[in-house]
Length: 159
Image 1 (cartoon, rainbow, N blue to C red):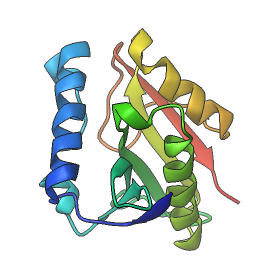
Image 2 (tube, rainbow, N blue to C red):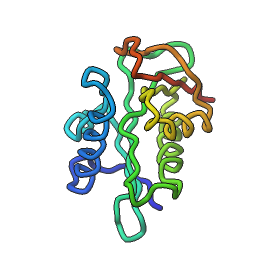
Image 3 (cartoon, one colour):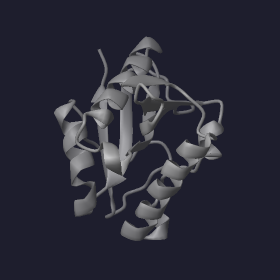
């Protein structure tokens, strides 16, 4: 598996991100969907990575964005966005590999912590378990988020 910085504008990535957004709107009220589309992931503050097989097939993706004005003791604050594994690649460690790469990037940038928002519904349970396995703990809303019964907020303090 190859994890590398990539463009969210690539056709196969756009298809995966469209699937991601479709699922988010199918499981959450519109005001509770915080997923980004491919154009928002092109912002300069976002680092987007993909996981691909040796033959170049897209396995999954994820992004790390720096939260503006989030510096403080120990450094900045990053947010995970658009974590998604292709259906055919689930159960193969793709999400773990993408998460590890994004956390390595955050550490290299000197971030003090990385946070995320995910859903509270049962369909998000695998994501919550993944993050908890890697040390993320519950926290309150951060950045521009507000309390929402459909959102779970998690954070990880980096070394």
